[in-house]
Length: 134
View 1 (cartoon, rainbow, N blue to C red):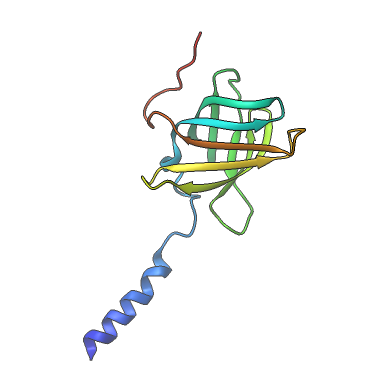
View 2: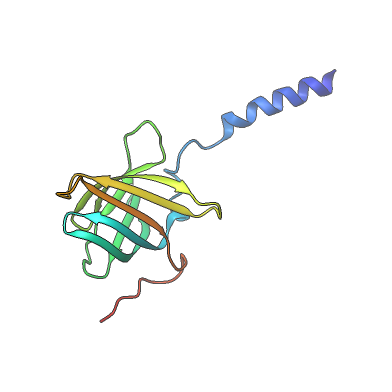
């Protein structure tokens, strides 16, 4: 009987110890990402890099050295970021792929055809710098 009580108590305590958000896991999202979608200037298809900085994720783009910052969102989900990618003000949800890689789906009001819609998925590893054509 004691064994059953111990198993029940341990199994109910585990969810209490689990982390309920990505706010402390920014290192998990560091790296190069391919960003595709629609922004205020039309179709988007380019590489970006996200790096942990100042309580959020700094965004690096080849055509914009100050490409933005994403910080934890105020939403109910906890797994969200908000801020700026380039000239786009966005709110992003963070998901995991089947391979346990971060995927960000971002939206905003910047586009004339229904709003900004961007998807970022890993594109080349977390330790590699952003490669830009000069």
